[in-house]
Image (cartoon, rainbow, N blue to C red):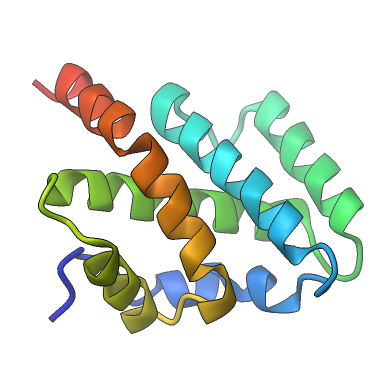
Length: 134
């Protein structure tokens, strides 16, 4: 059983990650992580025009069949992983996180970037959760 409790539906949210251009996928993924971090800290609103514009602009840069909604789903899916990983506490290891995201079909080639991002910002995420969820 995964150490981080993640819903199976996240697999669908990460469909766009499987179609990112190989030469730019890591660059886009790092941006998704930054946007997810921001969504955790400041929140996001499905009807917020600023968020919609940001997701649409990202989709335009990615090209292909990406849409503002597919970008939004990736960003919010990563945000959910960040939140649940932070909730798991400081005993969470990189292996625990890697196993947990693999269990919901997270694309393997982005797992190490996700882990790097999470462990770099884990203390900030945990502090934010503590301060907002008293």
